[in-house]
Length: 537
Ligand SMILES: Cc1cc2nc3c(=O)[nH]c(=O)nc-3n(C[C@H](O)[C@H](O)[C@H](O)COP(=O)(O)OP(=O)(O)OC[C@H]3O[C@@H](n4cnc5c(N)ncnc54)[C@H](O)[C@@H]3O)c2cc1C
Image 1 (cartoon, rainbow, N blue to C red):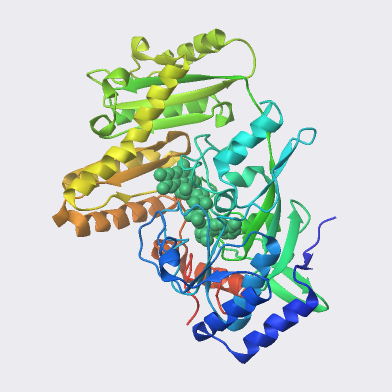
Image 2: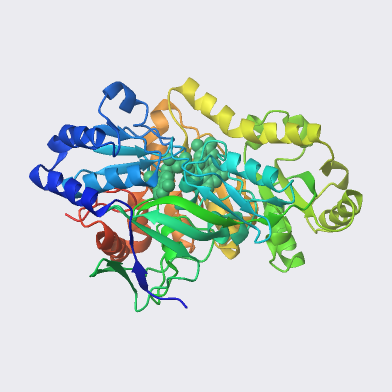
């Protein structure tokens, strides 16, 4: 039976915990860090590096925002982690979780204090349970390594299907805490759908183990129970649109939510995921990969509407529905292999073959695609029938961001990337607005992304004198997405960079709700300070 009373486990021996508390009571704040580091080291509890040269390698993440820190811990076990958490918590020292550092929002960029890196946090092996179709894994394993291990451990019968582009850099814990998603459209494309259990180290060093369905908030609160003491964790209630959405922590307007959902996508503000249980999926055996060009963006949107109708809105039969939009041809390697002279945009579909042969599936899908009322040239539908074709295609796909980055590097600027998703009814309006806006301002750009989720990335490539204008265009695009019922982030999250977007999208009430939830576990806002919301003044 579910309950809103969560029993927190002690990780550290009671004596050890009291000793840490005692040391921290005597000396607080950043000035106490060297003494604390010595204490933890001498007692074999944990190591916090204070060497600037070592720390330097961890202060910047994929966002390139500037960061700084005073110490670095790379714990190997939950106990080491708990010792660092407890010490920072009691001494009032901020601490920031850092996994693969592939986020684009500055969520793992420290703003002082101690970095807790998961680089060595592979404290237990990945264990696949074939019967139950699930896997348990430590948070510090690279997502792609875990996916490969799963395949190895069950001879390829089961797979973990979430495949963000950054899966060879991102760790499982990072992917859970950002609710990362891959090519599959719809709910099954993101981590949340697959997480069935979670272990979370709370900022004060206590541990929560929660299965999905075990802990549900009641009247908008969880009750956290440590020893005989109780504290309240109020859940955010702001209304998040039910589209692909990585903007802000999970919320529930009626105040009822699963604790597991509160943690997924919360960008580490409530605690550190130390391990999780993930559901697995049957390997389909084979995939049909198709690419076809279209004359214009309008045709692509028409095709999406046709497909939605044909599939009765159930995109789960696809494992990819990707779009190559405005100016992609200009920045894509091997583009002549995929586009015809008169086509400007293209669509890639991947279909898992669960029944019948690849040829049969190809026949069915060629018929579906050519049957659309859009301007599809049946002779240009490309079936990628072998690994060489698929590799060529993936290389073309990956060349887009790489070539874009090279261009801005030559211009001495940087890319400005949108991550908006909008309701499908407003997608056409959103794209018309955005393309017209960027073009009329003369800023170079390309757009590509997850067509099935109406979630595209517009990548602005400004010249030196256009940086300010491009930043302004980003704001206007995000505002338009909000106005149409969409969100500023479909997958990258909020971090520090998009704090203003969260405030604009959901208002001060939502900020206060997230702050109240955070204060319920971390009153001084020490863990992952500055992510999603500021600490209250
Ligand atoms: C080239 C590129 C492609 C990308 N493609 C995609 C994509 O296809 N889909 C997508 O969703 N994202 C994508 N991203 C964004 C990013 O890779 C994901 O958000 C990823 O999940 C971050 O994982 P990480 O291990 O790198 O976490 P980090 O960047 O280290 O951290 C991200 C956040 O999670 C917190 N965190 C890390 N570990 C834990 C933990 N164990 N417990 C609690 N909090 C933790 C950090 O404090 C931080 O707030 C891409 C990024 C790049 C650079």
